[in-house]
Length: 95
Image (cartoon, rainbow, N blue to C red; front, side, top):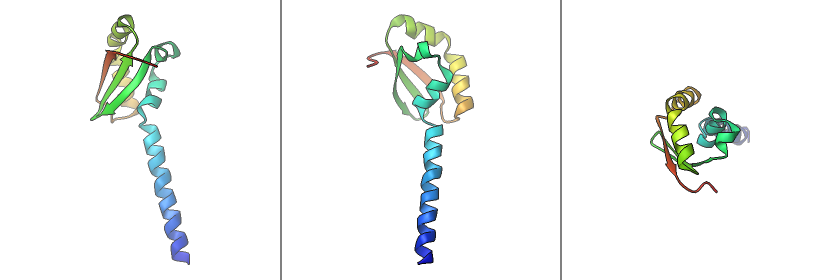
């Protein structure tokens, strides 16, 4: 009986560890840390694949603004999570 209890305890600890690792590297959560509320209102996380964070932006003006800040944003994202290698902005639906 003790072995089953130990196994369950170990499995639960591993799941908790994986959960915190995923939440730390969650791209939408990372964006909330590096962007202002105003900027967050004009973007939508699209996907995160092979280190590339793809973000939809609602207008060409915001696309331009965020591209001007891309280097700084990328540095902040890399500092928060080493898994981000690049950011790509594109005009698209944010709803």
